[in-house]
Amino acid sequence: MDAQEYVRQYGGKAGGLFYLKDIGGFDKHLLPLVYLARDQDISEALKQFPEEFSPQIVRGTHPNDYEGLVDALKTKKDIRNQFDLEFAIEQIREHAQSEAVHSYNKYEGQEYDGNVAIMIQPQNPSLKRGSLVEHPHERGTYLIDFVDESYDIPTIDRAVVSGDSIDISRMMRPPADKTVRDIVQLYKRIRDSDFIPDSQSFQMEFGLNHRFNEKDEVLFYQARPFMRFENATFKLDKIFEEYDCFGITPEDGLVLDVVRTWNGESVNDIEHPFAMMVDNMSHPLPLHVQPRNLAAFLPIGLRVNSLEHNTYRWLRKSKVSLLSHLNEFKLAGIKTGDKLKIVCDGLNYDVQKVA
Image 1 (cartoon, rainbow, N blue to C red):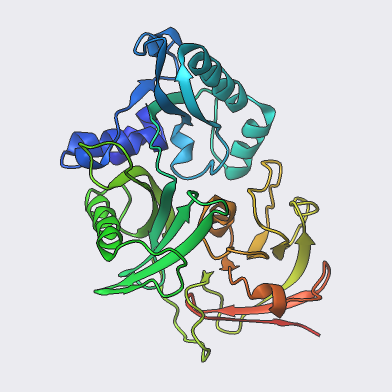
Image 2: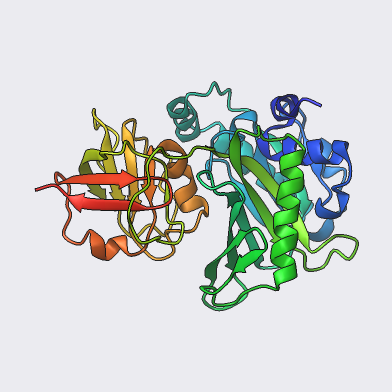
């Protein structure tokens, strides 16, 4: 089976679901899917639902969202009747045709005609979800970011799995060890399916099952490439900082001009490699933020070490990313126009202001 053919036919999101379904053995992890092709009329989807139905989630899917389009296509939740379903599909398709999405695809270097397919699935009422990657600079180590929205103040916690070791010491509300192991096991099975090339780490998005009795606890949502596996030819003599950096610099480091921004302002027209510092990184940056010479990504704020969507897009576009929340203190006073020297071996890093 050719995984890329599934991506070309169904899009990145839906292609993964169809691919795993056709391989077999994954049904317990997959929710039902109603798929509306890019050239199909909305009526083809509506006739598969009664007037009122249990909550559904509606998402756009396109071949480009395998490698890109993170947070670019619309998602509509809590769809419960045919009127809202029709309106949700119209909104998703209309937004996909917008100038903002066309421009962003051009920025990512992907051909795009604006026509997206639609995927409709039962909405998992669980407010517990997450994503994981195998560390691209340390094979066999898995970083799992859990998002728990079942409390007044949502939490994002990380578990680190390496061999038989599960480190949940920094989690406020840790899941059971069995849940953690089952998530990693599903990830490994998807790795073995060849949906993602073995040369790359990938991100798997998942949810924890709440009401689907015939399904397993861990539900598969999406898989997409993350970063190529790579090991540095040198090792920094630094105290290990808990997997909060990605990317490898030359051993003598990178010296970069800083652009410090709040919402992505002033980064599009930089004509040389630079370091982008984003203050209050608590939401995805707008699609019109399109830096073309991004060499280092340094978000500032709580939970910036999480690979949720706010940071994921920029990790893939930057040579090196420093995600420690402690950077808020390490880089206090750094402003646009200053220079930083960054040395990173993929697991440890050093960052200093250049006088």
